[in-house]
Amino acid sequence: MDAAQKQAVMALATDFMGGKTTAPQFYQGLTSTIATAVGCSRASLWRYGSALRDRVECLDLYDSGDHAHHAGAVLSEDDFAPYFEAMRRDNMIVASDARNHPATSCFTELYFQPNGIYSLLDVGLSVGGQPFGLFCCEQVTDIKNWTDKDVEFLKAVGTLCGMALKKVV
Image (cartoon, rainbow, N blue to C red):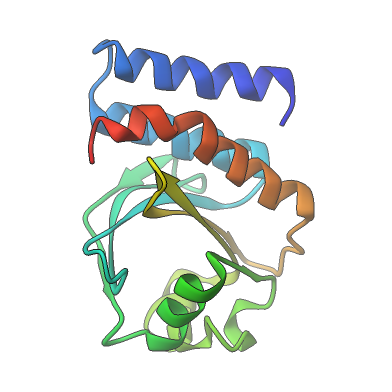
């Protein structure tokens, strides 16, 4: 993470903790910053719905194609078991070819194909030592080969935002 990116993330977190922005504004700032920094089509922030980590709710999804933010989608282990098992086990999924990856191919018909998604990178984040949710990056139109730098960036954003996210736990 370069200095400008770190400064941008810290400013978002500081403004949120100081009451200068709302939670949705904070989430929108994070997801658009992530999409730009990683160079992906879509970036989102999801929160686990239970301690079992068997359900996630989208707090914000930024789509750089139409510069729009969306929220509220819910995904359940009942529908996508391999994905949830992998996230609990590894706290990360690096799926450049997401439609054929063992943990993410379960999304192909219902989610990837309708949205034109080919690549997925999910990195879990914790708040106060407890699993909170995850950051998700998606690439549409073609396959994106995720790098260690992309993974480290998402981990760093999670660390920098941990205190701010404590506010919503």
